[in-house]
Image (spheres, rainbow, N blue to C red):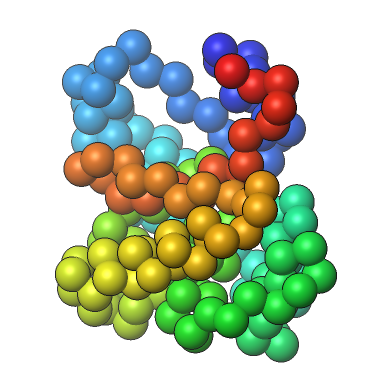
Length: 150
């Protein structure tokens, strides 16, 4: 399974492997934890320009998101939230990170409301990406399942 995940990442992001949640918590709270394992650090994203993830593309400078070349009618907040979740892929964003970055410090209920609307819009995309809740942590955007994945 680990090799499959590493293959899908294709060197896009570091991978941290732990035996269980207790080991992960210890690693993240350790004073000797490497800087790249800072749980409050925000994953890097493109400040401007075009970010593509399969058939989903975000043009931050042009304030536009397209799916298979067709524009998606998203609010500015939904657009920013989706842009954050797209890069880098398979990263779990904490509630706090998303509230601070995409909602200008708004609270968790505002984030949940925006996530609900964004999920509804993504569900309407045939073969589109999936927005998943990582219980107690935050959210991640997953690519659509391939036909040969089980």
